[in-house]
Figure 1 (spheres, rainbow, N blue to C red):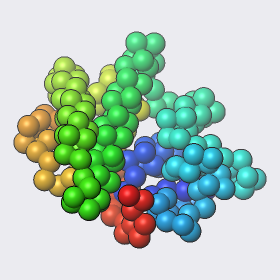
Figure 2 (figure 1 turned 90 degrees about the vertical axis):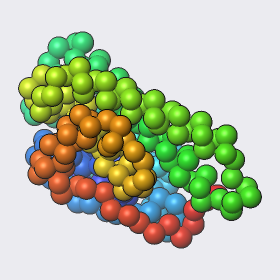
Figure 3 (figure 1 turned 90 degrees about the horizontal axis):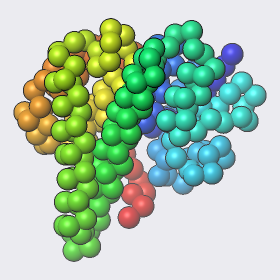
Figure 4 (figure 1 turned 30 degrees about the vertical axis):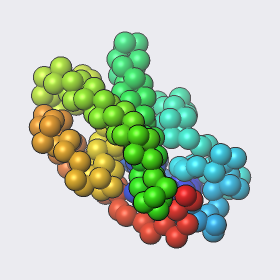
Length: 216
C-alpha cells in the first residue's frame, strides 16, 4: 500500500490527517505543495482545489477535505480508533473538530485580509474574524478546564479532539505569534505542550511557506 498525501507544511487541516495516519500506522508519502500557486496539482484531485488530499494506491482515487478523510480513515481502519468509545464522546469529539476548523477558517480569512494593500483592508471584517477565533479558543479552553487537567480531552486515550486542538494551536503559534491565547488560557497551553511532545505531533509541527500568489 502506497498512499500519497498532498499537504501544505503549515496547514492545520493536513496536520490532522498526518497525525492520524501515523497513529494508525498507515504508510504514506508526503507531497508538499502551496495550494495558492499555479503549479499546484490539487485541482487534478479535488474539485474544490483545497488541501489535504489523500491519493490511494491506484494514483487516481482521491479522498479530500480533512474532516472527511478523518471519517474515512476511522471507518476503513478502526483497529486503532481515534474516536471515543461511546456515542456522546464521539459527538463531543466532532463538536471540538467543528470549533477548531471554524477557528482555522476565521484566521485564514483574517490572514489573507492582512495581505491586501493597507487601503483596501476592512477593519470590521478582520475584527469579526478575530472575534470568531477568540470565541472558539475560549470554548476550547473551557473544555480543557472541564476535563480536569488530564493528558487527553476525552477519557484516557488520544482522540480526534486532541488532534484537532493541537493542530489549530500549532498553526496559531506559527501564523499569529503575537496572539495572546497562551497568556489568556494557561491550562490550554499546558495541555497543548504535553500533546506536542508526542512523536506524531512533534514530527508534524507546522513550518512556514512562501506564497508567491496571495490571491488577494
